[in-house]
Length: 169
View (cartoon, rainbow, N blue to C red):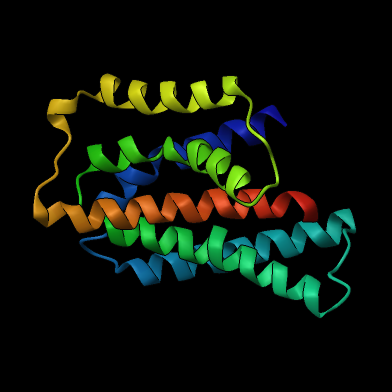
């Protein structure tokens, strides 16, 4: 489990750097398609080995598809598309928004009632991220603003998928 977590963390942490290197050569939709094909094969293989359950009805399949769009293709496509229009620093700053969005969406969807401590954590994460990176290095130029919004929307997709997947898991 620890090795799997380390591999996932390495892949996640190197995403912005690799994206900046690959995106000038390979379009975002091609990268996302390849990642979805690889993930599909990996999950299908894991499902066969483990013997997991298959969605039972149309509602389960609809939830599964929504999670795939939000947490898979949509999230990745928005982040990569945003990365073509923003700086690596801005994308890195926006990545810690996932847990913040998770708390906010949990509260808005009435799935979780965040404690004052969680709200404090949201505030500390937001302020701490900007402080550690340095507010003077955050670019808000109109040329990168759309990229920032796309990356931020991708992070929101990821958080919403995580929150909605809890009941299915």
